[in-house]
Length: 387
Ligand code: PLP
Image 1 (cartoon, protein in one colour):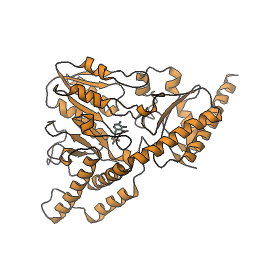
Image 2 (tube, protein in one colour):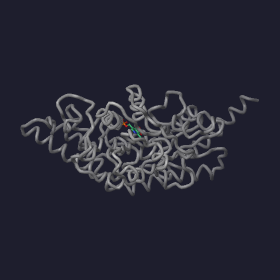
Image 3 (cartoon, rainbow, N blue to C red):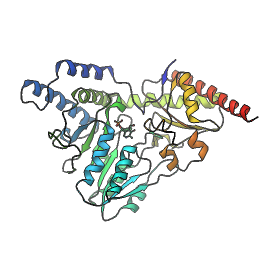
């Protein structure tokens, strides 16, 4: 048995995306900047992918800038805005991905001011908090659309309305939300938006920053002036074409896929209760599940060390993770759960189970049985050790 419940870390590429990439590697390997037919063929393939990615988020193709992934797109958004000013104020929140947080910390060292909004216990930032933090010198608000650890969905459209005509740019990291819930740049009212291909069944090492027409940000990479002078470097053609293919398929399939991951997620939770597991709690929003990503579950089990439980589950054939995949292995409790102000036992025993459209209710029941067994075993071991 091998059950993959780590779809927020990465997803399995669609076979169609793999085929599209293979074709580019084999038959369309020209440099898209070339002025000959090889270059034009490559350019056309890239232009097609740009349209496909743009269509997923209701953007214009010319507003899509390909990057090496979500991390680079987040960096480009934050540092790119700062690059146009000598000083200023940025608003973000404490539960952002480290690609945003570390960019902001870097800017603080350069003399910028950053406000890190604290979420409530369920993981939400309110539009009132953003309004209260605004200053005359605020340049940018960067708040993620959905959180990668607890799946909470932030009120980006309301924040977009708040910032309208205020001369403050709004960026959102939609790496986890795109392909799971509606993501439309005009409905959200954002100026910039980050995407990552490998979270929506595309290849790794490619992503995009949407930059609204008329928004001027500074480049971070200097060279041949590719991507309309914003992101130099010969483009990752296979990755970009695979990303485009995945974006197009996701656009047509996401409601059904989201429903499948939701059903599997709900089944696991139901099964744990049915089996009679005690003393566990959902981290993040647990009342109104529409405010949480469909495939996301984050659970703490009293008296159990998350790292040990994950190892046992892996041996039992269930792949899950602690906190985000990026910080897993650091031994540090998740900065997201810490920001919620949870009790110590919830921090040290939290695991993240993220379901994708390929997960079935049957898999969810099997995974629940494995969790039930391992949690009870670890608890009985701990008791034995004490006595
Ligand atoms: N932002 C969020 C919310 C993420 O979950 C991730 C990846 O886990 C990233 C950014 C980084 O994306 P990438 O892996 O493409 O660099």
